[in-house]
Amino acid sequence: MSLATRLPKTIDERPSRSVAAPQHTQRVEHSAIRPVLDEVRRRLSESATTASLTDAALRVRVEMEIAEVLTEPEFQITGISREEIRSNIINEILGFGLLQDLLDDNEISEIMVNGANNVFIESHGVVTKLERTFDSDEQLIAVINRMVRSTGRRVDQTSPMVDARLPDGSRLNAVLPPLAVDGPSVTIRKFTANHLTVDRLVELGSLGPESAELLQMAVKYRLNILVSGGTGTGKTTLLNVLSSFIGRGERVITVEDAVELSLDLPNMIRLETRPANIEGVGQVSIRDLVRNALRMRPDRIVVGEVRGAEALDMLQAMNTGHEGSLSTLHANSPRDALSRLETMVLLGGVELPLKAIREQIASAIDLIVQVSRDANGSRFVSSISEITGLEGDVISTAELFHRRSFGESSAERSSLATPLVSTGIVCQSLRRMQDGY
Image (cartoon, rainbow, N blue to C red; front, side, top):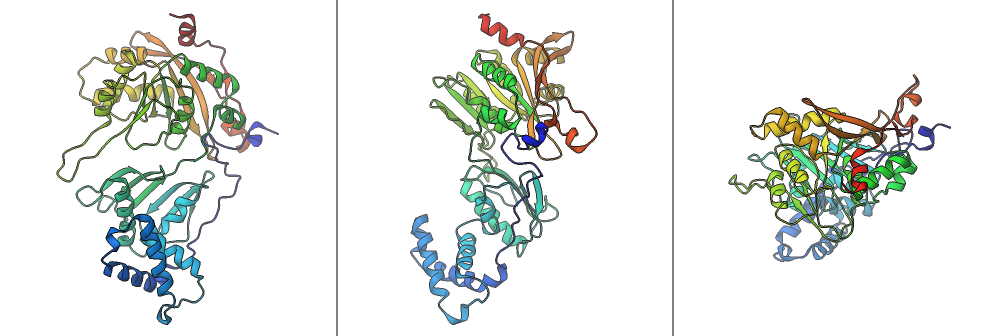
């Protein structure tokens, strides 16, 4: 039995495509419950006390109104149980409508809505279109507005895009027309409630024992680590695992666009960006937060994702007494990650020669951990590279661990078919730290 067969799960503990995804269908046709929903809403709006109720009291009130409306002959609905009616109406009034049961399902990792008539989910690495639709774009926009209000942000015609964090920790991105040509777009990335450990990643085959020990020692000895990978490859999940090696006595400050990290550290401050208000002022960017974090006496700074001009501030922090900092970056290979860092520094308007920027990168970053995702939806660490310095105008790297793909069959082509193994090169940065110089 191959390693790929024995260890089919991913870096965030999702099974591969060989596990059937659950089939979600719209349990109740929305038009069937519309009369009851409209009547409940009418009664609530006519009550002078509704606006002053707490969330718990409002829920009780809604359930009472539903029960009362369903006793009246003109609101009798055949073929649908009362529990289904109650659940759907509560989701419409207090929850997130047709998306609420998807958010409640722990088997679903991603929810994608491409206009009112196209709802997709990703479950166990498989993307599936659901047989459910919104009545109209207006109904979908109402759900989006309810979600955004719960985050303290806004989305409207003057600000038609939003990136926010839902109360359960899921990351929400929404785009309204006319920017979204085919109707309102919603993308919700959920995060597993069961935090993985490094031992579990080794068991799943996402890491090897030797590479896991290297990463643990790298964090302990305060090497600066950059986690690189494409969209949905498990960068944040791995960053959470690496952060578990940080000493309990260290002061850690996290900086994120929308909070996704869930670090279990006693002396930690989480900073999150803020968009501009309706007057176009008050924006706080990642770069602003990174700069401010330097004044907060951090032992380490964890930047959830480097996307722009804050790259230079992060590099300077790593070079000026904040060793052991961690971050992620979108790139398909370690070499691409270095190129992206250079580009982001240049886009920040800094007038530095390219060689000076590369010197900053070479002295700041110690390790690049590349994470990947194969066609089966499996997520894994594909390589670990050390930045060894600058040779001329080129940043030199040494690959410490890698996976080697081989074979022609789909099973053999799976990157999990070969383990993450050492190349035999010793990590010089770690050796210097262990030797005390």
